[in-house]
Image (tube, rainbow over all chains, first blue to last red):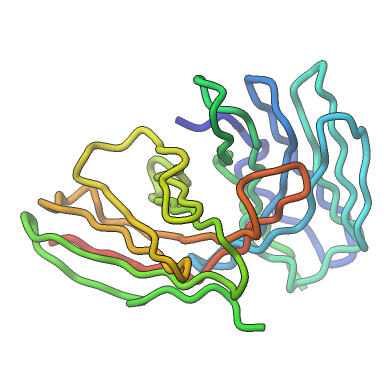
Length: 115
Length: 115
């Protein structure tokens, strides 16, 4: 089952605009990660934010984490046509037995950046 | 450094057959995780292997199995294929088991079609 739900499911913007995607989850997490996937290919890791962090930057990416609301957002500034892809949040949480951790992915946001 | 490789990239099988997929992690990585991606269920965790031992398993039937060899290469096997097993199977490797700064690197995936 998916822990993360992403919003919106699809987003279409013009090149140069900012894109914001949101992710909500249900259980306590160790960290939250964002990935990008181009057209049915493998996933590319974008950024990881730990549960004790509130905000993190990497280039044009800004991620926030609110553990009290169990939500995260990914902001892509000054978007480019090459940013067109599906974006997934993934929560790193302990399994129910507590013996192992696993990544649980959200349903993804399809971002289209129009030139 | 070479990335994660998966073979074959595409596969067509018929119901009832079995299939074996292979994943070679990045050199030096000891953890390999497998995921299934379908349009309906999204990305779902199958299992994780570390040092030839299955560390964690997702909610999949026993028809799905895997193993890891001493060189960290991993295989997953699906027996008695069903139409619903059609999916993109992704393998990811990481240096160690999931930890706070542990990034997973994904391969390009194997596209399995069951007819």
